[in-house]
Image 1 (cartoon, each protein chain N blue to C red):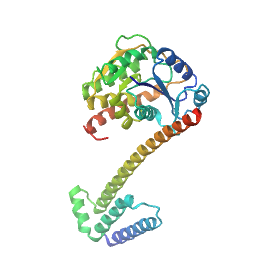
Image 2 (image 1 turned 45 degrees about the horizontal axis):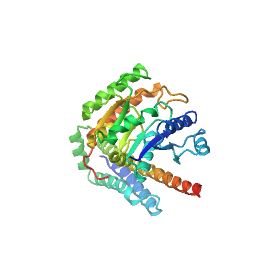
Image 3 (image 1 turned 90 degrees about the vertical axis):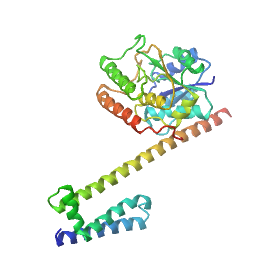
Image 4 (image 1 turned 30 degrees about the horizontal axis):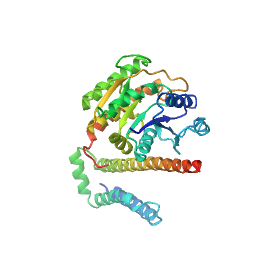
Length: 117
Length: 235
């Protein structure tokens, strides 16, 4: 990787991590869900510090240009984060469904009580 | 035997009164509950005015979530048997005693009212019958259950499966998946011939255009359900 690419990546990662930290400070992001994001940032930080890893990965994947290996890593982590998001949404959907059902049952119980009085 | 009839209803203002009238006439011993899945028409008004026993969901959950609410109700109030019957008048309550009999005798855990045993009454279109036959084969393949009318929503369920379905029931097109769930949970299924009618009013929830999507989605979810099923899971 060229020095120019490494510097710009470094700046990019720094901005990315700062945004996450600011959001965490403002409590707009819960720690639980930010871990994967921070981990991704750290992995890319290591890749920039030790570009040998990128060259190694490029050879391993059969990618000609090392920059493309960076892209492959990036896409991998984005997919990982997307899957975790879908998992979070599914859990929430299940909980919301359960809330609606129990609320409706309680509402009915209450209505039946007031009606019979 | 304490029996509850679950009637999921979404925009069924044209049919709901007849369905309840039929049930009261033909099975006066059973309790019933209408699960109004946040209908946008007059359904809740009719239920209120006529003093029908009904549960109003505050958000639309779809057929699976609606029926499951009925199972939760049955679980909460200690029913021994729950019967699912569509809110559109397709299913004739006159068959209820017949489909509850195997539950009462302990012969089966889940009883399915089927159009395709004696092939009487409304048989649905050829394309749909083909789709149902395909799903039936698929279900036989994944769990060896021999059920012909896999999409029938006319069912009776015993206490054990009331509790299972109250905690785990598919969301969108739950009928075929519930069959697989029954078998994997070690339940016995019995199919009983019934005569179904064409719906009397309103529109069916499954349009022809959606059918292809339905088939793909249901087939996939049956396969995935089988692959990812964890036996003996604590609920």
